[in-house]
View 1 (cartoon, rainbow, N blue to C red):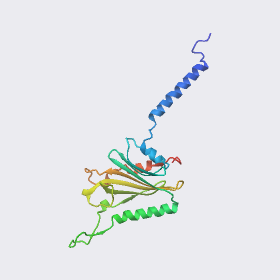
View 2 (view 1 turned 180 degrees about the vertical axis):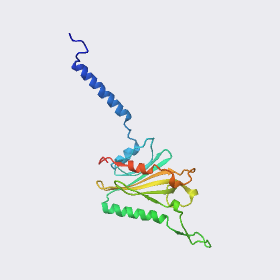
View 3 (view 1 turned 120 degrees about the horizontal axis):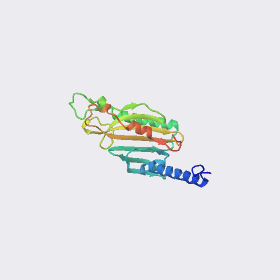
View 4 (view 1 turned 90 degrees about the horizontal axis):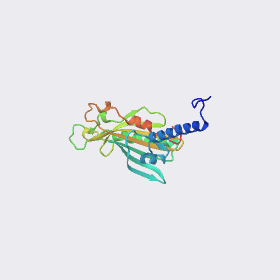
Length: 215
């Protein structure tokens, strides 16, 4: 004589499998990151980036339904992304070199603002000069710089500098898009040497990825 434990009806098996699938689906939906305004904007140009905390989209510009510029807040940090369309590998390399030259010129020696100064030129202290970092993947250039309260570069006066920026130039051959990604982090007034303070920017650039190619 068979007991209930000796056999299981097909209906019971089906119900059990259905329950497992439904539970798994609920867990997936609860843990899947929601697509916020930043992701929505980036998806129009085939890109995405995820953050652990809340992201506030502060400003966005688009042309013909595709993002051209976004400016977002992640806590006290700021993220700025610009998109340049229609680039070949050669034109992307030329744009990178042009931008690099512009950054370097911002920190070159300048004439003293008034006569009689001991030196006729003013030099930016080495601490505040741009620093190039190693690149990987589609990155053409990665630099660390200091920026003022308006997120502008070129200042060498410590009292005016408010952010440390990690700036990356990224080119995707498949789409022909060239990206300038800047991640600004407030200067830590307690750090004895700002250059030694760890930054999140390099990791943010690594997390900036193509959703079209799956990279």
